[in-house]
Image (cartoon, rainbow, N blue to C red; front, side):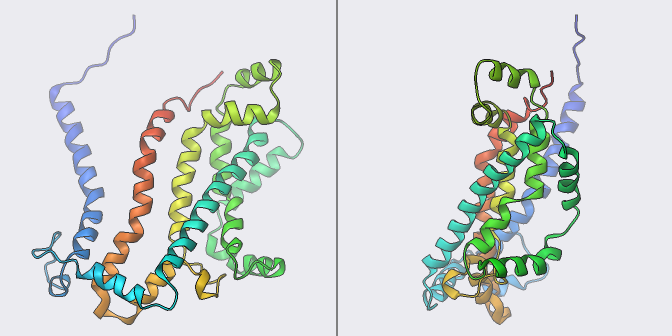
Amino acid sequence: MAKKLSRSGAGNFLGIAFLCVIAVLMVLPMVYAVGNSFKPMDELFKFPPTILPRRWVTTNYTDLFVLMGNSWVPFSRYFFNTIFITSVGTFGQIVCCSLCAYPLAMYNFPGRKMISGMIVTALMFNGTVLWLPLFMIKAGLGMIDTYWAIIIPTFGSSMGMYLMQQFMSQIPKSLVEAARIDGAGSFKIFWTIVLPQVKSAWLTLMIFSVQGLWNTGASVFIQSESLKTLPYALSQIVSTGIARQGVANAISVIMMAVPITTFIISQSNIIETMATSGMKD
């Protein structure tokens, strides 16, 4: 009979207290950012700083929308550009990385180890180092100053392929072989068996992809003002200096709202499926 593990009441209390301290340290920066966005100008530069404002105001947000309304490109256009790039880029990255990782995890073919090694090697390079060769490639393909200059490179994410391959390699081969014996083809096995089993992996990849694409300025590869993204437009508003520090705090809250919301919606599924991600034969 298996031996049951037990902990003392003091051990449980210390464990919960430790988790509470960690939670407060993680939430505090977000609370401070939200508080700053509602502070009047005289409280923003007060020392020592306060986490929450003593006098709550909404002028930072109203000033932001007034400034965006005075732009010759409508605010809705910047918002649409960001939403389009984020949604299409995230969907394409999940699909392409999953399709590339599937044969690497499920089949043994010549060159498999070399390709896997190339993916791991690509993880060592910072994205900024690749800007020059990427710009030359995109210019040669005529993608400069288009949405695809930002979207297409995300499809071949080395981190995404590595993550999906590692999770797919944990799926029992007997499950795939049983489906193949029953007459299921490779694509049917991929869509109906493999992808549901690695749900935690592509949900995690979705969070990272949304965070990266939502915050991209895209100013290097896109020059047309009507195609620029929301982060670029907002950064131009606060570039005048200290006078718009309150507006800058409002912008930071808006920019972090979407990634945080995406994580909150997905975290329950990630925790639920993570429990079954370590299956073995």
